[in-house]
Amino acid sequence: MATDAHVAPMQDFANSTVKTWVADADLVAAIKAQNEKHAGLSQADIDAMDQKWRAETSASSQPMINEVLGHAVSQYLKKKKDESGGLVTEVFVMDSKGLNVAQSDVTSDYWQGDEGKWQKTFLAGPDAMFIDEVEEDESTQTFQSQMSMSIVDPASGEVIGAITVGMNVEAFL
Image (cartoon, rainbow, N blue to C red; front, side):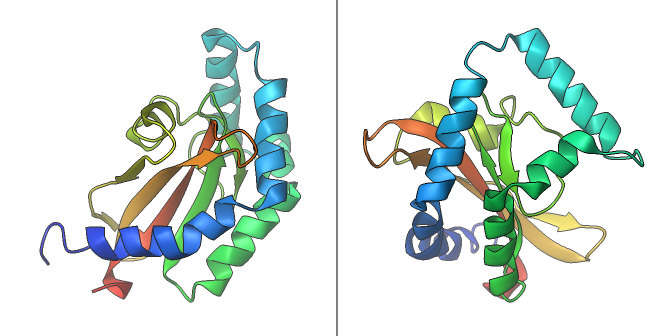
């Protein structure tokens, strides 16, 4: 498999499909509400939230995870994933701090702000897109990559968050 053969098809999918997802008024409103709610968080607060999330991923009680997965926008993202016919493996949206706002599936961590998927999109401006390397998913035995892009408030043109879409690369090739 050519190392970059996945890039152009993923860019095309992002431009033709994911851009319509991130224009959804409810999704934009959810990001803006969380940005306002999290405006005063310190890095220590963020780290504590992330540690709580990570602990919940293997716990029987998951109030923080259930709250995020219960959002209507999470259900919207899950529906988009399900409608992709196996092309999309996961979808999650992050706020201005890199914290999860909504997601189709449970992520291993809550804070994405220390990773390229957030740093190379949210911090890079309104037209930023980042396509990560292809990796083999041990659980599904498929090759996957993540496409991330900035989310812009259509009213102000300001970058308010980012989206990451995991994709089954083999479905493109």
